[in-house]
Amino acid sequence: MIRSTLAKISDGPRGRQKAGFIIGGSIGLIATVLLALPDTRAWHEPGPRNTGHAKLACTACHRVSQGTLRQRVQARVTQLLDDQRRSMSTIGYTPVGNADCLACHLMNKKDAHAVYRFMEPRFAAVRATLAPQLCISCHKEHSGVRVTAGGLACAECHDKIALKKDRLDVPHATLAAQQRWDTCLGCHDYHGNHAFLSPTRLHDAVATGQVTTYLRGGASPYGEAVLRAKSTREDNDHEI
Amino acid sequence: MRSKKFVITMAALANLGIYLFVAAPPALTDDHSTSTRVPIERVFEILDRENQVARKLYTHEIVGAGKSVGLKYDEHWHDVDVPAGPLPAQFLRLTAAALERSPEHIGLYLGSDAPINPANLFTGAQGEQFKTLRVSRRPVSFFVPDTSRYAYMSPDVASAPACYQCHNAHPESPKTDWVSNDVMGATTWTYQTATVSNEEMWRMITQLRASIATAYSTYLEKTKAFPMPPAIGEHWPREGYSIPNVDVFMAEVAMRASAGTVERIAALMGGTGPQGVH
Image (tube, rainbow over all chains, first blue to last red):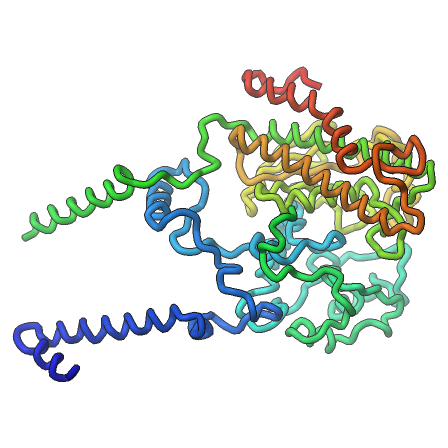
């Protein structure tokens, strides 16, 4: 039946062009419907979710822009024509940023590496190299792991470390001089989200392999988490 | 043919214009677009003064008086097994963390050219600006190109003996001869725009106070885990082994800060600036 219909349409001038439009349009429509189904989500995700994010809805991070489509178009055009409008407006979804991460991941009060601290003017050099002020610099989503940063460049900020009263049996200054930056995370839980006490002997530090496994999504070598992410951003809305 | 296309194009553009602007729904709100703008430097002055009032209150009435009745304050206060509250500098950091979580993303930092923790050493533009500030003892403002933020640094002067005595005695301190009235460091504020609307200014002040309350609440929570928790209520440490609840603490902050803040805002509204307001 489809063949006979197409044969009829294909008759006459520009018939084949019409048939092409119909076939292409139909394929496009079917693909759009399929991709819109919740069960086909994985087909159009850039990659597997990062550790702990498998059960999140897409809209947990990808928030629909405010207003109606018409209002958004209007705001974008106004932005183009009139520089006075500075509130960013996006057509479909708002860009995912630190605020979306922090909506569930509360900032640890003892976090020495909280992202906002790197917005301080003096961190300009490390912002240019590592961009630690952005969650996604180390936790690029849809990568299927916990941490995506290739190597935590502790040296960027701590290369001159020298403690007058060093608790570690091998002085920090010695480790820095020997560029043993792979040992840092053996004693220091980067964001301090676990009940982990730094050892005083380098021998007792968490093995580099265990740290690597953890960064790739494995079990924590730092013990029990003292601060867990909220299941949804709404769980966290009452907190500033 | 060409004129026909031109007419159709013009008609389409006219329709788009009508769709977007003439028959358009209400425009999306733009918090930044109101006509009256306040220079961010003036807002920083207000915020900085409010913060100084809260920090001074915490330093003298909570830490200072608290120590005299047996309460402890320690740089490792956040450790579960340390029954102590945060030091004044750490109280500022708690305030800063709460501020950053607020929608306005106001940056607040504390640093020095001789910090106990080398990671807090002023470098780059901040280091250069601090040299000027140390001599003039007056706040400085500058722009941070890579973050597109406006910065304001105000001197952090050694006022309470407990502050500089502790820094002098700390084993990691690179400088051990601090004396009263020294510029020990600077408080840095950052914000994303050069000017703000009146509404934004009010929100920023409100958010600072909410963040101070959050910081103080964090201390209160910690005291509940002390082996001998102090009474939390109406009374201050100078009256005994007790500490004020967050409402009492914030009421005192408001009482000490509000007059100055209102005077500064009134001066701004009158267009005369904050000169002469103390």
